[in-house]
Length: 420
Image (cartoon, rainbow, N blue to C red; front, side):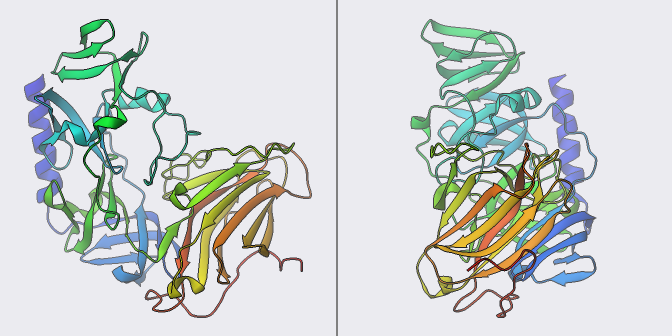
């Protein structure tokens, strides 16, 4: 069976990487410096098009294409420092090196001290994740719920300890009860101790490339004929057919993601104000925001009486800032939610989102400030639940040497003029 799995993986790899000139076309989103475009997205022959409009690569923040209906069930995964995910079959752990047979880039070995988590049963592992957990420090992905240095099983209590080795049938862990050899069947995931993560993750300026099997790679990405090429620090040069690419998120120092806590905080006041700080709620990669997989790359749910605050860097480029986001009410809302955008102590936009309201893309030019806040408050019609999803919310530096494609003229779409 192991031989058959290996052969099938090899066939899939050849088909995935060798077929030339393929293109990806489907419903999706392009987020560029001059706004958000939705429609049929084509990613082929070194260009990006959405609804027939070409978008220059240098003007792109991200491109997201709805992945085709494919079955990738049963894949394991390893998570690396820096937020990378390699999907495939976890083959073995021996001598501090892990071997994985990946879906699209073949068998690979990686040093154990680069790994933050192993997933043995991904579908079950997802149930262990708490989408209300805090952000990981300095990274753009969900913190995994659970205790570091712990093996989680489908049945039975978690086992704390150090993972020693893994083969096709068994694994061993050095636990407080001694070295335990356990059947691999039923193992869900192992979280590595934070102290073992001694090696750095990808550089902060690396692009992020998501593949249709759920893998996430970090490196320098560029469009080439037939797909996307990635220069990766560990894997070297990789080329993926366009139909294997789910999204590309470009790295740009003129763009700040509002959903990353490295620069911001979330305070949840509740209906009865407690003033207690809270972690983000339902941070997602376009999968938890009411099923908006083809509509956004990242999303956050803000309930009423919640404030998201984001600090801005200094410098001429940040003397003018544009906020872009897609906003819609939470599913099943019974009351109105009022979204308020504040630049420092000045309110620049207010808009109510009631039950069943259509999603709306906002582009708001802000004055030079050190801090931007998005407040979700109770609207005119009181009822619970109430709140909004913030989707692909970014801040773009629009000052000196602005990025290509960003108009100089200010714009504010949607909402009403703020009260003086």
